[in-house]
Image (cartoon, rainbow over all chains, first blue to last red; front, side, top):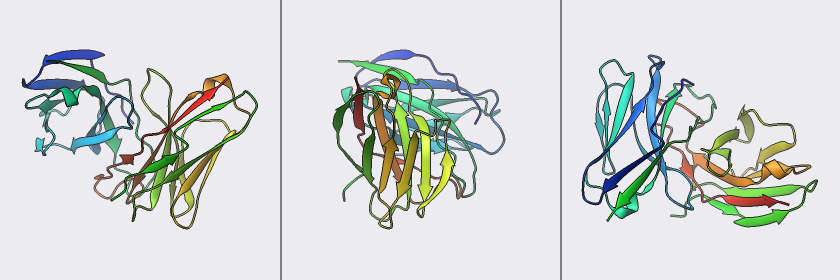
Length: 113
Length: 117
């Protein structure tokens, strides 16, 4: 799987929007962009994924650059419960194959009250 | 509905011993994956099983093995434990092993924390 680059950490204030960037300049045409987050003492949790178009769900929005070489996870109104490590992961279409997710170190998001 | 359950939650072993970790997937999920997470790092893929067959393997030595049972639960076994095997071992389940539009969301358990002394 292609590699992603994320900042080690970011800090934001409660109730403000948070934009978490991810660079993936070697992304291939069939790679999906997935985001997971890991709260303290828990396993990772799926957040959102997309291919080309921007995506929204109840947790977050995913903005994908036109050239797909970068993306941004947007938390519209951060709460203290959003403090976690956020992982940006590229996943090639495997059509039933069994490649695992390739996690990097992610971005440690700190939310200040 | 119950999520992915793992046992034990914590355990301590000594070097050279063997350990078995267990995972029960979400009801209806036929695929189980195992990940190792060393402190300060992201999870690393170890194995994936689907319909009781190994479908994928990460870059781990042969001391690591796993199996999936007819009820889709799974075991991860690690032989001849080393200090470096100390980690959080995560199990994840999904409906399908990987793709089908790549909506292959994985559901993770809370992990088994292994300490090797």
